[in-house]
Length: 169
Length: 103
Image 1 (cartoon, rainbow over the protein chains, first blue to last red):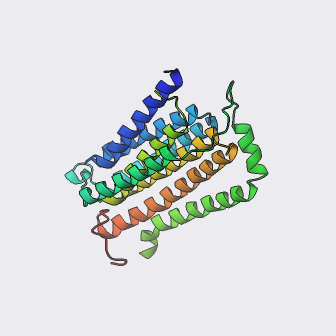
Image 2: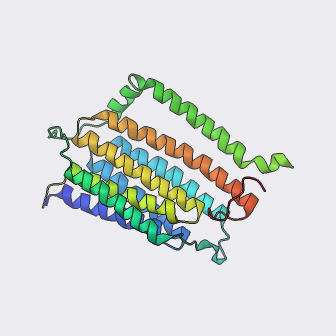
């Protein structure tokens, strides 16, 4: 086993175990913090896949942005001192049955299908940031602009929705 | 043992996707449902990047993954604002107890 293989299994184990904690933990704070490890492990997998820019983006946006937002949401909607932090599950048995069927089907399809694989590029991985920047400004210019408008709308919308209480008084 | 290839990443993303679905379907807390959605989006992103590494997708897969991340950020901000409002109105964020559109 090469170093890359060992690293893949390391990150994959972290991702799956911490994602299970997210889904199965009774304590919502534990869920939020193990989501952190899932995001880190996925960023590590991006590095293994030669996606350096995306790994950094994952760390900045998911860990620095979305996870902090989630923690804010948890803290603002629960009484920390009481037992409210605990949260239950609904109909876990049929849901687990159906999800494991989905997982089985997906894994079956993924392993059986003969994917068209390009010949692997050997040698040092090429940094992707330059290529991504060029594509943003050429082929993907319209989606890029639309995404920026969506982010602006989301920003204004989130602020308005969260402040509605004061306006009503 | 097989060398790490496309299939390994696809299987991993299938597992993460199913865990995310399980979280969305079973958890009572609205914020945990959001975390399940983030798991699903991350699984999709792993697929995009794996195909751009091993398949013929090249940098286009990276672009798609970046847009997924952008939309996930927007979605998380809006959804948490809505959850905060729900908490102000109903004093709970359990999705099975919220069954009214208005007070």
